[in-house]
Image (cartoon, rainbow, N blue to C red; front, side, top):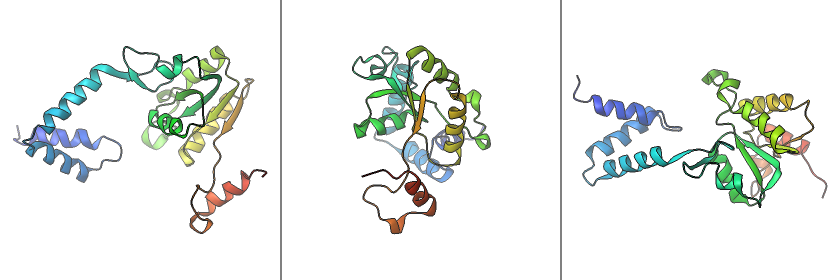
Length: 200
């Protein structure tokens, strides 16, 4: 057994996190291994606490405390129960919430259709979405998915799956970000901005 096997296991584990490549994982692992200030113990305790107390909301797929499932957003009577915003990831819910522009309910798919990554219909919470729409009297489904090939494919699949139901399916507007200039926009962004133009 190699003396460095624990370090290699840590590098592999850290490398599985989104946005962390092999080199970054190595730097993190070495930093944690040489730490004498207790950062590794603090991190271990925080990870154990999250593993023991945080889970996925059975209704919307957002993160919640295990003893508060369904989450506070799902049980709040002040939220619009007829509008359902579909996102890829729980982090997307926090971004939309920070805008203050949406007061409905959420549904996190926990991924998107991505054959290259082995993510298909079975890996997403699509069946739960269809059941919620029927059971909760949803009248509008807002697809807040990334505007890339995988996000577009996922949106098209959901739109097709909902075609027979009496629910309005909308998608977030796409175009030039606020504070940006046309000179910096790519052709696809400009095309989508023109297609989604609104009356003043």
